[in-house]
Amino acid sequence: MTATRLDGKALGQTMRAEVAAEVAARVAAGKSRPGLAAVIVGDNPASHVYVRNKHKACTDAGLATWVHTLPATTTQAELLALVARLNADPAVHGILVQLPLPKQIDEDAVLRAVTPAKDVDCFHPENVGLLAVGHPRYYPCTPHGVFHLLARNGFDPAGKEVVIVGRSNIVGKPLALMLAQKRTAANPAGGDATVTIAHTRTADLTAVCRRADILVAAAGVPRVVTPEMVRPGAVVVDVGTNSMDGKLVGDVHEGVAAVAAALSPVPGGVGPMTITMLLVNTLAAAEHIDG
Ligand SMILES: Nc1nc2c(c(=O)[nH]1)N[C@@H](CN(C=O)c1ccc(C(=O)N[C@@H](CCC(=O)O)C(=O)O)cc1)CN2
Image (tube, rainbow, N blue to C red; front, side, top):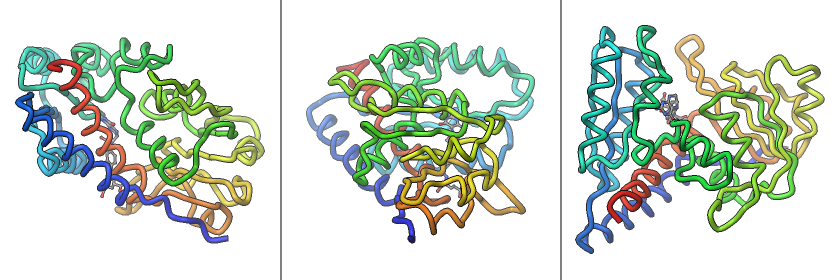
């Protein structure tokens, strides 16, 4: 079997065009132009690539966008002061603070300082709580991207066994919540699936992964999902973006393509979908805040 490619670059472009059309219609109707402020602290080269790509995607879709680049020596007080200014700025509907932050900064404190209505990453505990009770204000970008990458390729998770390898706050935990939840009008990305969260300390990880109709690799460990961990015909989503010997590699071993029915590539899979969902959320934030 050679796996079908779950092409996040192509789907991301399609969905960005949908956002662009909605933004143009919104502005033509005299409403506000959605605006995203991105904050990046320090010199992490990958983070700079991601923020540059987010900025370009926003510009291309007609959103207003600003990047605030702060030095690695920035103090927590300086960063909190910037977040407070952005919270108060009516042109800014979405605020994202690129992670990771330098060691001297308390990440949780910064994420809690973003006003929940502008928290387009969906990292604030209030938004995580709303997601957990099935009334999401926003969906977190990477899990939402995974949902659309599956659903829009004809792999509806409803009724399926999903195994997620990884339990991070950004991907594993919120994705498990979303995919296990009932799909309702208020929760359209509820997955109606049977979900297992596994991780690299799970006993007999191979046996657990082989139960999956849909296997999501989000452990942040290069090639941790190997061909024998995949049931023939399963759908595999690779969320990993690991740097190895200067090369970008996912959490899924290349050999999985011979076993799986469908597989998302790295690069070109979940990554571009993450950025697309940020645009979706910024438009939703403008609608939420300004109407
Ligand atoms: N504030 C946030 N910080 C971080 C998030 C997040 O969602 N919000 N997620 C990750 C990084 N991330 C988003 O910021 C991200 C990772 C990867 C990609 C991406 O498009 N990757 C490309 C490859 C790009 C390359 O050439 O290196 C791909 O997979 O095709 C986008 C966003 C941690 N921080």
